[in-house]
Length: 144
Image (cartoon, rainbow, N blue to C red):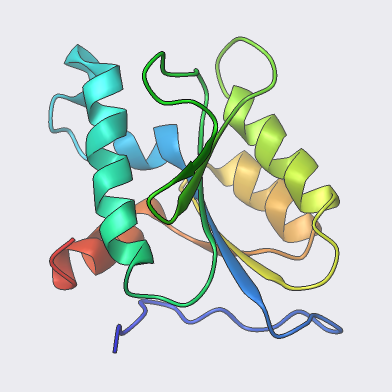
């Protein structure tokens, strides 16, 4: 059993389903491990860790990145849905995440981000927010 750092609480009227959404660029940047020297490789490393986590839980997991990776098309990748911002530029994933939240309907969403503005926007849509550092610590504890 995975022990969550801050278990999400259901929003009033929310269904029982949970979807975990990871702000990929924000989580990549949460640790100064040289990710900026090779962003595509950093995205792949994060995806591999999230795939490890997704294999241990029974709910959908989505990672959203700002910039599409040439070798990583949008879609399902070993248990994790990969999505990209719909526009070019910084924080493109943020707008995609908020748009997806608006279209989500019933069910709980837990967003992983340390971006204060995105967290505010996501909470306004009913999402529960967990910080990137807490999520990375969870991945470390679960050997992912």
